[in-house]
Amino acid sequence: MKIRFDKVGSVAKPFEATFEGVDLKGTLVRKGRHDVAMEGILSGALPMVCDRCGTAMDERFEIPLALRLSDVAVEHQEDLDIIEFLDGIIDIDYIIESEINAMEGTFHFCEACADSDEILEIEI
Image 1: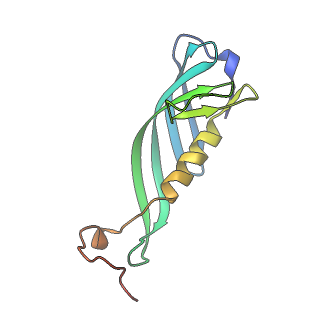
Image 2 (image 1 turned 90 degrees about the vertical axis):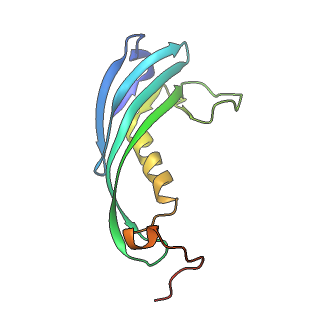
């Protein structure tokens, strides 16, 4: 789903999008000439592998998401939750995909390993 940056107004505009089975429901509202605030809930399930024992599992999640979107390059690093869309088009699918990539890049543990006090990985 793509939304033109200049079509977002000062009244919150609701949206819903799904990408690879992950849903993002939220609102977009203009906060300044080059700033749009996005707030929403990212939810779904992703296939993961336990980083300790290697068990395949589906990890369910429901994560609040608050981002700042800009159509110009941001020169300061005060806010790390900024996504720049320099072509003037907000790509909701890109946002979902990058959140999926961030989740996949973290550690995941199955129920059996989540409470384990072992320091090292389990050998199979």
